[in-house]
Image (cartoon, rainbow over all chains, first blue to last red; front, side):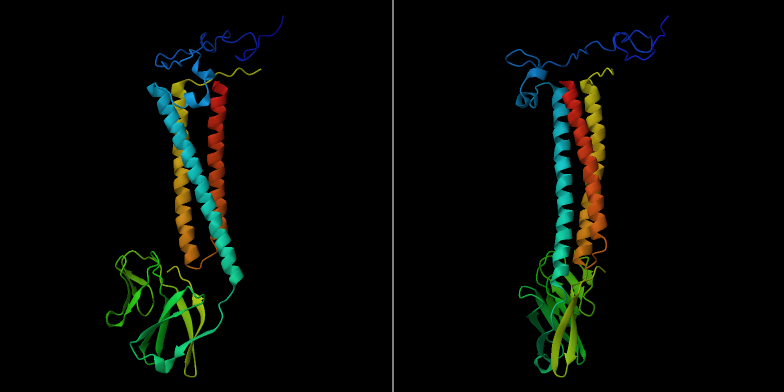
Length: 207
Length: 78
């Protein structure tokens, strides 16, 4: 006498073991499955484009969710691409190395409370040098850390002002004090040698 | 031989809803990662760049895995 195999998936014994309903393997009839193609063949045999545009609600709901999921997976791919774009940009920035020493102006060219603009380290990087006191000089990138508008020094209000979105930065520290920016301005490291002011590097900051 | 039965439409809709929840959570996590990494990069902090890229790649792998499961489910139906 052979032993009875209790598994429901044994060939020829489907649905006979008492562990599953007898209609387990009968085709499921969906009363709402009302889509009929013009050629009368079942939907599963229709071309892809026709299956993607069903006329009954449950199937349309499924297709819409499936396509939304596909869109979100592509969005996920775009986010990952963005992450690796940052990796590449960081690699390029490291490759550029430390900026060179550059003379900005003579001390005599800048009165106390005065400001002048210069470019550093690249010709496209506009910066602003401000003389706060006789022996206190500060310099920052002129690009607002919100959306890169040019900031304007307002020594009388002790701030650098961004007119685009009403942003403001503290004149002494370059840290944001109002508006949408949340990172400090890039600081230009200065060195006074004799009667000349030099830019020796830049300091990026997150806080 | 294992007997496979295609999912009904209701089952497939439930499955795709469940997967969508995971995909949305992972995509939101990636969005947060991207903005936080960009902020750190622009602020000169490059210590988080590679770990964030790895985490984002992991999220993408999970999302693609879910998407492939959905495609397999569709193939099993036909």
